[in-house]
Image (cartoon, helix red, strand yellow):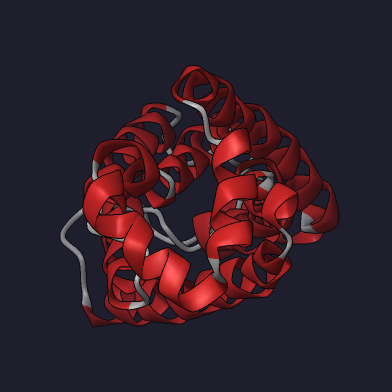
Length: 206
């Protein structure tokens, strides 16, 4: 769909190399996105809500992510966002798997957004669904490195917390958690687009 009228005049330029302004936007939205993740993660003090974070974070994170897309009109910006979020998760004690999932799903989301010419609302929503799958990386330590990771969690939260949490994190449930990330990511994308409708119109995204 071609961009015409005022939207065309105000829409950011697309393509080209990343510039200083782009990195500033990445930094700002990385911080905003992390605040949303941290706020939702506070629910994790209750084991069942910890397991449900895969489906809760994307519902709220869709708003800053979709706003970010009105400024992310160059390839690589979403990838860097995913990588930085993964690094922050590692620093805050969630293990190193989120670095990989942030990078991989960030890259795929980047490609999806680019395939829509940075002007497709449907690709923006799909991009958020895919990007949200990075969250599964926060739970992989419980599955892949449990022997070394669980003692640390037990020391912080106690045996009762970990024992209950692990009843929700059985290996066969991980595909369900991943699917929850994607589905609620799509829903969060719709929510973000609805709330930011004026921003989308101004950026020429339809």
